[in-house]
Each structure stands twice: as C-alpha cells, then as structure tokens.
Length: 518
Image (cartoon, rainbow, N blue to C red; front, side):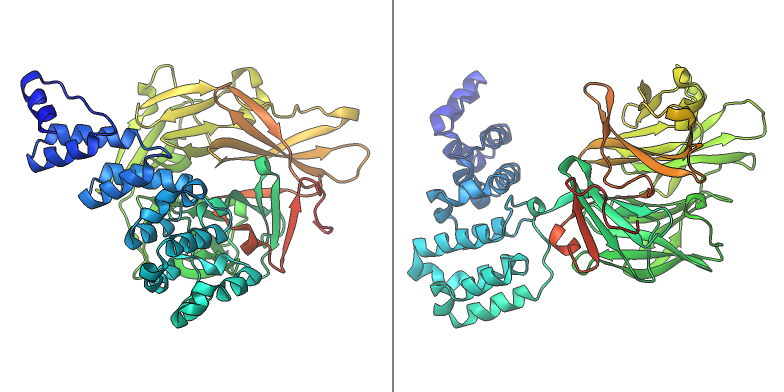
C-alpha cells in the first residue's frame, strides 16, 4: 500500500481498485492523508453492488466511513431479499444485523422475510449466536404479521429453546411499530363534498380506492403530512379551528389543540387557511381577513405567533404554499381596476423573517390570480382553470423554480368545454392540485345542467401531468356522477391493512361504482 502512497506523493496520480481500496484507505487514514482517504471513500461508495455491499458495509462500520455506510445501507435495504439469501449476510456482527433490520426503508412486502433472515444468521453459528436472539427480536415487527405467522414463529425451535424469546415476541406484537416503507402505498386523501366524515383514500395509478366513514367528532377539511409520515389536519367546530392528528393503527382522527378561537364556521371551500410543515415544524397560515402565521410547539401542545408579512391594507391574498423550507404567499393589489401588480412574499422560519418581491421584475410578465397551487420538489405550480374556461388560448400553467428564482410556462389540462352533448350546459365549479408518486395531478369539479333532468348532475375529472412529454393524461375516478370529493392536501404512505377496518369500504378498479348511498 505504501508504494501507491509514494507514487501519489511523487506523481500526483492515485490508482484505486476494489481489491486494494480498503488497505489503501487504512494507510491514508494512518498517515492522515485526507485527499487519498476521501478518494477511497468516494470510490467505495460508487462501487456498492450485490457482490460488495456487505463487505464494504462491514469495513465502513469499523472505520466509521459515513458516506460508504450510507450508500451500503441504502443498497442493502433496497435489495434485502437478495442480500438476506447470500452467505455474506451471515458474516455480519449482531450490531450490524440489528442496524439493518431496524430500517424503515427495508424493501420487504412481508415481515416474515426479516424473521427468516435472522433465523439464517443465528443458525450459521447457533452455539455462539443463539444468546443474541432476545436482543434481535424487538427489531422484527411482529405486530405486522398475521396471527398464524406469529403462532408458527412461537413454535420455532429457536424460540422454544430460549425461554425469554416468546415473551419478547408477544410484547412486540402488542406494540405499534411502523410498517416498512415497501409495505405501504402512497395515497391522497379526499373528503366527500357533502358529508365531510366520508373520506376516500386513493391511488389511481395502482387502482387503489378505500372509502372510510369516520363517524366521529373530529373530521379534518385540510391537512399536511410530515417528513416522518405523521398526518395532521385542521378541523372546525362552531367556535374554533383546531388541530387533529391521524392515528394510523386505529384509523381515526384525534383532537390535539385549539389553533384559534372565535373563527366563524364557514363552508369548507370558504376557509382560507393552511396547515404546512417546514423543516420538521408545523405552521398554521390564515389569509383572511388579515395574514396570521403560527408555529406549533409539540412539546407544549400550543401555538406560538410568528412574524407576518407586510402586504398593505390594499392587497389581498391569492394563494399560499410551502416549498423548499420556506412558506410562500402571493398577493395582489385590489384598488386599481385592471391593474396586475402581484407580489411574492416568502418566510424563513429559521430567522422568523419575511421578504418580498414584486413579480413585475420578471420577464416575460408573470400574471397571477386566485387559483390552485402546489409544491413539488423545489418548484411551485400554479394555474387558474377559470381563465382557461373563459379563454383557453391564453391560459397556461406557471411554474416557479425557487432555487433558480425563475418562472416558466407549461400546458394546462384539457378541461371540458362549456357545451356538452344533447344541448347540456357544463359549469366549471372548483379545482385542486395534488402531488402523488412524484407526479402532478389536477382534479376539476363540474355541474352538468341538462334539459333531461330537473337537477344538476355533479361529476369530476382527474388529470396526471407527464412532464417529460409536456402533456396531461386523463385518469379514471372510481365514483359515479352523483358524488364529488374535495382534496385535503394530504398525501401519505398508508399501510392498507390498517385502512381495511370494519368501517372502511375497500374498492378497486373492478368495482367503480362503490357502495350505495354515496
């Protein structure tokens, strides 16, 4: 190894290969040669694959090479079924094995895969490793197994041989450990337009639709999902707006704290407020009649006032959205007829400070009004379908890149025309954006006035944006024309067995009509 070190010192050239990178790293670490050590770290991280992941993981663990540890752990989690069947798995230490099977991102559809991997590891050196089984078992999520699987495991010779193991398993079964990421399905939550207690969890791309009738006092109309997949919502009673939290295991909403009092009970579509998460903290933003921003203190279960933007007395709010660790609020002056002078305000929670910029500084001119908006990655998408309705030739979706500080235009969905078949008249009523599976979705509400019926027909359309192609594609909705659901802004990873409870009606693409009475 020192030949390579000397060669690098004299020539400035470093030759690295898989069979020599580990001893080269050790030599560089001993000699405190940062460049050589960092080069070896990067090389190992870039060469993590099925044949090297376990060996590199063990090396990185011993020498605390974080970049390699992270790369190996990600690969092992993504390919756990393959890795768990390899001989290399049995070479892991008890701590290394425990670290791996503790990961939420472990790619397994069934927890029995994890149990089988542990059995293989113990049996590889049974006499030495059986003593470690009680410390490993709590990291297997037995609460996610069926009762039959659990019963079979309790009868396994390894468990029966150790008196304490069965009690450990029973304790884990009674716990509420999270499902693995691969066991969940990303779903958007919609709320029934008429009865807010009737909700729909759906993923149209996977044909998953689950209706839940939450017959309980707490019922959110808007919400947010945190980085650790906790779901919070805003709900109302006659005197206040309050925060509620979703209980995944019991599939119910629980009241947490009062956000504000004295707020009159308004129709959901008229409540102009938001629940947002920025950098792990919850924020409540109210736009009407004046801008109010509050931050939630989870330890004290109370809300604290934050600074507010200076929008002036002559401006009104257009829309608000959180993106790229900031809160964005767009406003517009309302005292000049025909004037278009929108402003962008953004809030930095680390400094509790607002900044602003007039959109007139951008070229070409950015024209905004009240419309639907959503964040995806570091971009904000905005569109007003009503403009398209009135003048489709002069309507586009606008996208603001928060990092590049630039605007771009994209095509809008092909909404229905105002004139339908048989002389019917179609009224555009409402709209919403949401992001599901890293794709932009738009949902549009219509009323259908036909001479054949004495009442209005209600229906919706759903569109998915194919950004590489620059086109919108229509997607199917499972419910009929007599039902509409409103977006709650909640998109979360859901463990479907938790949703399939006695008060949930499961439905897929093969049963598009859903339950009666909707």
